[in-house]
Each structure stands twice: as C-alpha cells, then as structure tokens.
Image 1 (cartoon, one colour):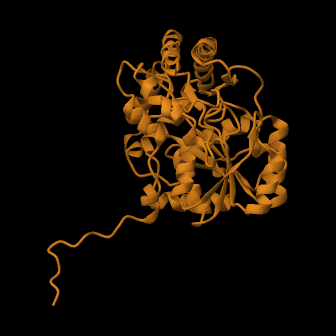
Image 2 (cartoon, rainbow, N blue to C red):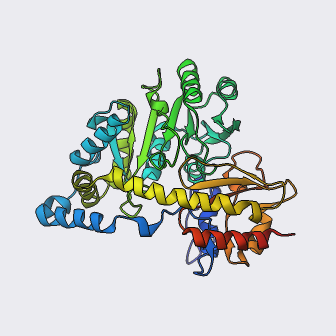
Image 3 (spheres, rainbow, N blue to C red):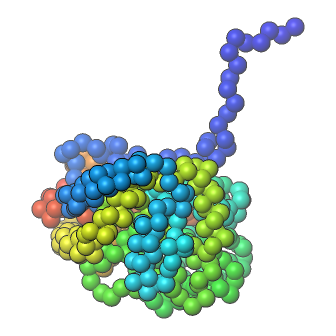
Length: 399
C-alpha cells in the first residue's frame, strides 16, 4: 500500500493568477529606483506641488470634529458628502449627475476591477485603444477577457474600424482614455467622441471612459466627455480620480454609471473591501468644501506646462534623426517614435547605465507592438532636471 508523503503539495494558484504577469512599468521602476536616475518612466505627479497643508488641515478638521464617524465603517457606495461634491463637480462640467449616480472607489484602478467583475465572463471580448493604458490591460486580462486592439490615429479610436470590430468580434465593452491618453498624450476631438458614442448606441456596446488627466489642460478648449454625447447615457461609465489633481496617497476615485451596473459594482466592492476608507473620504469632502481645488489644479497645470515645454525643447537633440513625437495639450505623458531600426526595450539597459529611464512602448500594445516607441513622463522633474535627463538620454541612444 502506498504511503502518503509527510507533506502533500498545496493546490495550484488559479489559472488567471498564473497567466497574468506583473506590471512592466513597476518592474522598470524597481530597476531605476536609484536616486541618481532621472526617471521619465513613472506616472507619478510632482510631490512638491501637492497641497500638503490643505490636505493635512482637512484631515485634522475631520478627526477633531467627527472622530467617531471618520474612524467607523461606512457605506459601500461612499460618504454622502463626497458623493454630493463629486456629483456637483461633474454637473458643473456639463454632465448632469446626482449623488446616487456615483460610486466612490479606492482609486480609479479599483473601478476597472469592479467593472471587469460586473461585466465580463472569461472569454468575453474587450476592445481597447492601441496603444493602451497598461493597468487596464492587466485588469481585463485578470478577468479572463480576450483583448482586441482598435486601430487608432492621432485623434484616437477610428470609428469605422470600431464598428467593424463590434460587428465581427461582438465585444462587451470599449475601454478608452479620450483626454490626454496614457501613454500617448493624445486627445479625441468632440466629433470623434460623438461618432464613437453613435457606434455604441447602434451596435450595443458598453464604453468605459477613463478620465484621470482631463483637468490637467495647458492649452486649447476642454472637450465634452463621451458620456455627455447623444445616446450615450445608458451605456457609458465615466471614471474619475483625485490621484492626479489632489494626491494619489488617499486612493480616492469614483465611477458614474447607469443604475443596474452601478449596483453590480457596489456588490463587487462589498465582496472586495466593504468600503473605501471613511476618513479619507470625509477629508476629501472637507477639502472640497474649504479649499479651491480648481485654483490648485490651475497652479499644477501651469507648472506641468513649463515641464512639458522643457521636454519638447530638449527632444530634438536627445532623440535620433528621424524620430517623431506628439505635443500633448495637457496631462502627464509624451509619446515618441524612433526610427524603425530602434528597439526601445533592448536599448533600455544601456540608457539606464546613463542614469536616465523611460518606458518602452511595447508593453502598451494588446496586439503586435511598435518596438520603436517609448513613453516619457514630463511632470515629476523640474525643467533643469528634464534638460539634464534628455542629455543623458541622447547619450544612451547613440548607436
């Protein structure tokens, strides 16, 4: 008779955990964490521009005036005061919103996970921009989705190609960052947004519209959300976040969604964490009541514009002849394409030896990647550091 081993192996991890890797950006940041590295790889807002005193005062006030409430459990949907404030800000920007339309999330990244749980079965198809925000690709892959890229141009998603893919692939949703997109920095014009919304209305498609950067505009006119387009009201989920306009540490985001989907996301959130930390929500609501967030965002955007301009000024000398790049009207990122003989993934170790870093473009593609591309974050360093970083980048890229 066979004798059982003293210690049997534990059962394996779930297939989704085995098949989905980590974030390439996080891996790059770990390699480039040395303080002497000028790091254009991260997507971190500039910490010296945080309104640290204003945020601290909001926390002090909440803990002094209502400590029992601030330190207690809260409702899954979010603190009423914060939901009211978020609804008011959204309505003021042209999209009529009630507090009951809003679900507070622990960062907008959690909103993606909740939507994946509420909408996707393993094997369902998700359409994404090409290239696409990395963490969205992770969230959808972890849900077992089949991810299909939609052809894009300088204005974002191609509506004709989108409609063809919807007919052929029968997807559940399209994920898009239409304003100052991560990684490209591009913005989808109003007419293009209306065309995308019309495809969703005609063909039966959810749209997840992620807007973490939209308030960081340096120039040009604000473009209305896709969610505000005709026929979009019952099929567009709008995501927002305080991470880029206030600070990322409190982990505060939100989603605005039709009632049935919002309720499903609330149930998913209950299963995941019950609620977003109460004290953080109340402090954010107090900050919005006592401070002028719009004025703070304007100051941040002004500084970011100077940093974008410093990067644009240094790129001609830093990148090889034949390279091309876009001029973002806002946000945090600039996208560059080197001559096709360059592989930015293969070149990165040599560049890092020159104490500077970027993110190769390849991981942002759900389909065949353009290996000559790279993403540069221009907001974390001051203009003088940007100039020195680009000088090092030029040295590292020389063949």
